[in-house]
Image 1 (tube, rainbow, N blue to C red):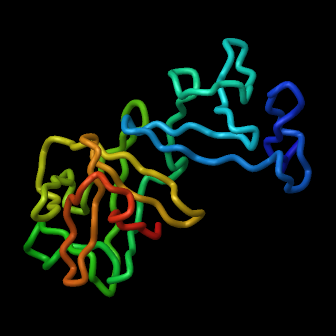
Image 2 (image 1 turned 60 degrees about the horizontal axis):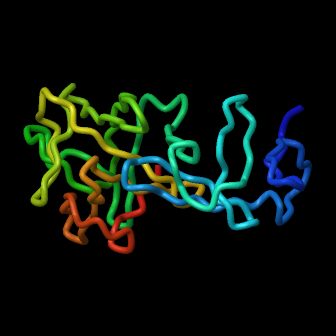
Image 3 (image 1 turned 90 degrees about the vertical axis):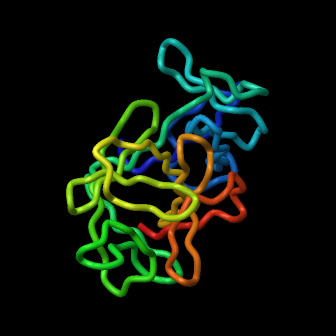
Length: 187
C-alpha cells in the first residue's frame, strides 16, 4: 500500500486509504510557538494520536496529543536561497553569513529533540544569530525550528520565537515573531 492520502473517515478517524485527492484529504498546518505543528482536518478539528497509535480528528483545542514535530528526513545538509540569492559567507575569511550570494554554501543540519535543529557552517562552527547578523563562529549550538510553508519553502524560527529575515542588501538576521515579515527560504 503506497502513495495513499490521509483521509478523514466518518467518526473522525484518519486512515491512509485515499487513492485520490478529495476534500477529506485536506489538512491545514497550525504551527505552535514551541516548534510543534498541529494538523487541522476539514471537519475543523485537530488530529490527535491515541495511545494505540491511531489518529483521530476529534480535538477542538491543541494539547499535547495534537502536537507533532517537523524534521527534514535524510537531509544532513541544506542549501538556502531567498529572493536576494543564496546563503553563504561574506568572504572566505569572515564567519558572517549573508543571503545575496551567487553561489551556495552547504549547511550541516544536526537534529535535536522536539523539532529543534542546529546549523553548522563549512568551518565546522555552529550558527550564532542575533538582531544584527548571523555568523558561523560558535562552539555552542543554538536551536532553530523549521516550519514548512510551501512544498519547497520553509521559515526558520529561533527557539525564542523570532524568525530569520533577509534584507535586500544581503543582511541576514533575527527579525520579530510575526510570520508575515519572515523570509520563506527555498531549500
